[in-house]
Amino acid sequence: MEQKKQLFTSKNILVAVAGGTASGKTTFSKKIMKEISEYSVILLSLDNYYKDFSYLTFEQREKINFDNPDNFDVPLLKKHLTMLRNNESIEQFIYDFSIHLRSKKTIVVKPAKIIIIEGLFLLHIEEIRDLFNIKLYIETDDDLRFIRRLERDIKERNRTKNYVVNQYLETVKPMHDLIVKPSSRYADLIIPYYDGNKVAMKILLASFTYLLNNKKNKL
Image (cartoon, rainbow, N blue to C red):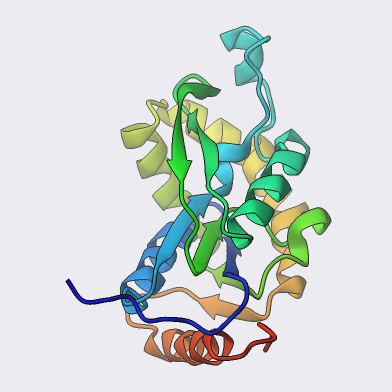
């Protein structure tokens, strides 16, 4: 097996991939991982850092606005990101969207030289914003994002069409307009998402190359 390249940075590189719901954050993150597969790289999701709502009934949990950044366990997220950057493993919860709860199962995530995390509010949350070496915002047409979310939530999250539509209109879109979209001003790079956006990927790869060979770990 081919050896991973030895890097010259003292700490790991942390990349935030933000953007609206169903904007293509996960897909783009996986494309990044494929392009830099010669290095050790891991992908995390902000969704796994919702607070523990096990003290509420299912009916009560259904009424929670999960598109509000106040419902994330920011101290735990910051702790885990800091641990990974310092080459320490973490024990991560897995969020179950079908019941609006953290799963009882956890997974051990080992550190890597490149740590990518994707999520709606990564650029909005001030407590973690300065941890990132590269901050990306994925820009995708609103209509396309809604269609993607509708298809995804019905197929993967056991939602009904009416539930998805009502949730989108009542919480998802208002919070996107109020919080997610404005947070794009903190991005280092706003990427129009479409298949074959090779220019954006080349810019990213050039940034990775620079960071991986710069002892100060800064652009």
